[in-house]
Length: 497
Image (cartoon, rainbow, N blue to C red; front, side):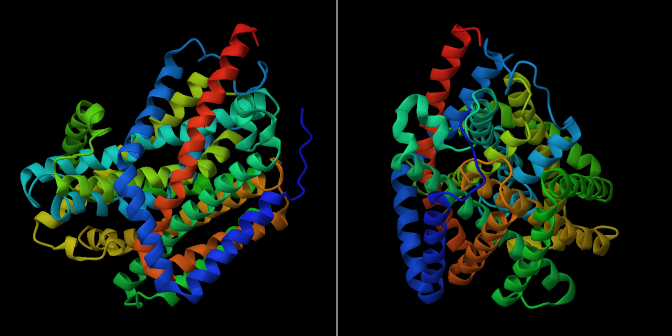
């Protein structure tokens, strides 16, 4: 087994320097930063939108093949290893790390937007747009998204626990690219993975701070302003550092379980106080249309229709970029908590359980919001970060539900940042499974700083620009990881390992 220490690596200093330089640029010249990030994002979206659709679909095929293949019984670890965490805690942690704030931010906003403001094909507000609203939301949060996470997590867990490799992205490429992964090329790969993680998490923290501010604005008239969002980020940073100090087995585990309780309470209450029968009928119908349309929707780029193609760029390419940018963080974290599970058990759990929960969540909140919209209350006129609270305002116990919503966003904020600092610590201390508190604290401050800078330079649009740009190089690394994994997997199976 390779010696793994908790000492910081060159990757730590290089990526931290890039992060600080980017923060300074965004602070000193925010307009210039926004312009250049927008130009880069537009170039990638226009010229490589097809690539994002194709590569994410290939990751899904990769996972489905392994579930039904002869490799499914192989354990992520030694043959005698068994899981460290039970199913409930395992699902809670992977779900809190993998979706979290995005569910709450887009729970009402996405289906409502696809119905009223930005339907993919139909005219806004029509029955056709309504039929598409949930199906498209399911597509963006369904099995494709989790296939990206599952691919990274599976490969990292396999190399880490079965082959005793450091928990580094570069270590998974050694069978394919050789010893150069122990030198400069390996460090370059890990720098890309760490930077993608920082940007992916910072984007989500930016969304979280914006929505907490939106809830305070809607409920109490607190001004929606950068300085309020900065204060929210500072308070949340202090809280997740306290959680970080307590470690994986306590802080993250307990907070993740609390998240699931809060989320479950909010989901059940909305289902009861909302249009229950309408929600259940919509769920049944939308799951069916989602499954039927999945093969076509997964590669739909609409080359002959400019408006539809732009919609794919604005929505699908953005979401695929988000999942790819988050994948090194979520993948490494899920790998860390999944030792001992079989490939079949792991992939089935990661793909199906969170996807089903996402379907329940978006149907309950999305159709409740659409029902409110159709009753004559114009939710669509509200900013995205306030739509959830506008919907709650029309339900029984709406104020209490809104307070619970703000609390849930806050705890998701903390667990996402907490999990990310742990993973960033692993990636920048030579793959140590127990990175030092000082390293984790450093990354906690860095990712919060980037979130604040991105909000300062251009709000949500700047977040999206940088996210799409950061995801592109890492997607190429994931492809190489898959090839390396298959090379080793076939060799292990042939050797009876």
